[in-house]
Structures are given as structure tokens and as C-alpha cells.
Length: 392
Image (tube, rainbow, N blue to C red; front, side, top):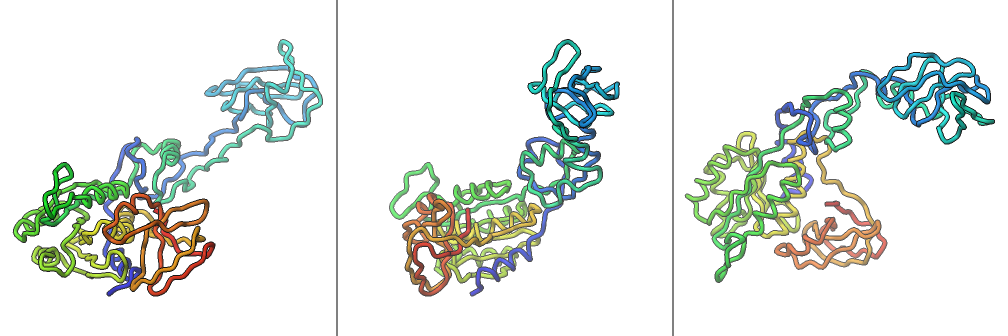
């Protein structure tokens, strides 16, 4: 069996970033990944501007009384230079007039007609002035390729005139749950049946990871039905997730069906717990993940392998998962035959393992915001000792 790191390397080596597309500047860019460097088209701010409502003057060259020669609002251009004994009434965001290099705030002066009295204040050059180009300079890279766009980044793109933004598209991902025992979530399970939790869980995980998701429902353990559904799904998806049917049982038909459809398997089984039966293959450029049917196993496999692949397809530079050392909130003693990824809770800079009954236990995963990573063999760690954690 492959170790997790080796299996992930195989997945990422066969994962290609999708072809960029231009998207108009809008909220639709949120969480998309920038495909090219974004350059400033001009200095920002494009002029020295006032940071306060007050009076613009030259520091070190004024008396205790100043004559107001002009009023400058944001969006206006000054028409008069400020000389000795003079000032201009200025508002926040307005350009500084020639001859002025500081602003005294409105509340720090006395105004009598056109005369401003500033008393014995000592003003410094640059006081309450935002110099030209302080935020960005023309030609400077302000957002590098690979940046995941948040709301502030979208504002930066607007600042530099990014009307159409080259970004990576969302990967098209299809989820297929397999098994005769599965029924839809709105059905009453009969004897030996369970509701299809994997389909909903995996679809929501994929949406959270930035994929465009199609939930293809349930396919029974019947080879012709699988071939019919998967043949269509493979042709229209960037990523296919199958839940169940990948172990070594009589009714685990997925590996054989994928082979018949032309999917090339790159590995089957990984040295990890839960999630050992994981299968990974490719159909041309389509990634195919055969995930275990146990819900917690499918969840862990998604976080360790599928989410990093989706990040790479979407153009992100950092794919993860990233291991973070963190002190334990309580002692733990376990013996595992494989490296184990168990649900845990972050608490005030520490991590607490959650009660967990193993691969079928999805409820524990619902309460988790981290995976505690324990090595194979004996794990006896006292409270306060560091353990590796994957933050969810």
C-alpha cells in the first residue's frame, strides 16, 4: 500500500489547472483564483490626499493665524497654491494643493471668518496626508497569479480598472453514490437499507471547496446500470467522486466497471485509517476517485486527496493539506495499525480528540473542525504535548 504522501503526490502529478476564462468584475469572482498577475495601471492614491477634514498648510512655514484662500472638496482639483500665512479648507479624500504638505484637523483650530487660528501647535510635514502611490505604484504587481480572490481583492481589481478578470473556472464535479442498500434521503429505509448520506455530504464538501457540483444520485450494485451512468458522467466532468463499491467484496463492482470504461487506475488502497480502500484513476484529464462507502472514510479521503486536487485545478498555489503542530487539550493513548486521522475540536490554541467509534461514525465528523493525525503503532501523548493537526 502507498503512504498518504506518496498517494497525494500521484494525485497532484496527474492534476492539471483548468484553462482560464475572463469573468466580468462582479461578486461572481469571489473565491475564484487569479490566473495572471494583476498590475496597477496608475499610482494609488493618484495624488497626495488629505486624510482628515481640516486645513491644508505648509508645516514649519506658518504663523499662528492663517488666511483661508480656497475650499477643496473630494473630487475637486485645487486652483491656488498655499503660501506663507495661508491655508486651504480641505475635506477628507481631496487632493492637497501646491505649497501644502500637512493638514491640521478642523477640531484643532478656531475659525473667525476667513481667519484660522492654530495656536502653538507644532505640525510636521506629512501630518494627515496620504502620499501619492502609498498603496500601489503604476506597473506594480498588486495581486499575483494564484491569489484566491476575497472581497478586498475584488476591490483592488476595481481600483486598477480590472473590468474583465482572467480567473480559473470552477472544476465540474459529479458525485455518484453506489449500493443496493441506499435509499434517497426522503425515503423510509426498509430492512437492511440506509439513507444516502454520502451523496449529500460529498456534494456539500465539493461546493465548499469551490467546485460546480452535480449530484447524480444512487446507482445500484448492478454492472450495466453503473456502466450506463458512469459512461455519461465521465464524459462531462473534470472530477468524478464515487462513494462505495471499491473494497474487495463480491458486490464491490466499481474497480472493474471503471476499467471496462477505460479509466486508468493509478493506485488502489492507501496506508491510512479510515479510508484504506481509496481508488484513484484518470479518464483522459478527468480525475476519478473511488471513495470508501463508510461516511467518515469518504470525508477523510476528500480532505486529504480531493480538496488538494480541486485547489490545483482551480489554480491555487497552495494545495494542502497542511500539518500544524498543536498541543493536546487532553492525554491520548491509542494503538493503530495505520496512520490515523480522527475527528478533533480546536479549543483555545489546543486540540481535543472527540469521542469516535470509527469509519461509520459521521456524527463525530460533524462536530469536528480538525483532524488529529496519529502515527501507526502506539500513541501515548500527555496533555500539552504537540500532535499534528489538519485544520478543516
